[in-house]
Image (tube, rainbow, N blue to C red; front, side, top):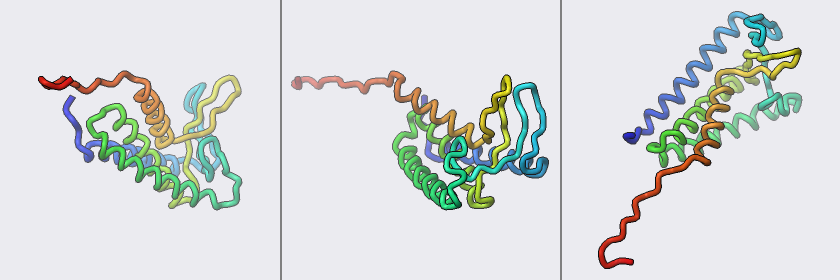
Length: 167
């Protein structure tokens, strides 16, 4: 597979950010905070604002977490950019990093605009409800799964041909 340029991976991150922000714009224009709309027996649209991290971790911490998670996401994004520059030819790794980057920045935009992340997808079954999430969260999750897969996947070994006269 031919090596991809950094710009290709950054485009993918940009598409994730765009899809995330468009979906949130639609939800914000359609639902009121706390409102839930039935979609299927296992799935609702619901508008919530999460001031914490995954699973509302630290959501009731008093406000400092907004800036903590914003700075953390920006620092991780800078680190991801460094990794992407070094590994543009590694498809699965770069795909994972690009998805995580787009998701992280999509949620940073929310924290800067609203002080919290807009969540709206709610899965449920048999009376049990998964915490609401969004497109950015989905991209981060898929990216994290790909990162784990990449770490355990067999990687091609570099050709170590011995030159004549060397041992």
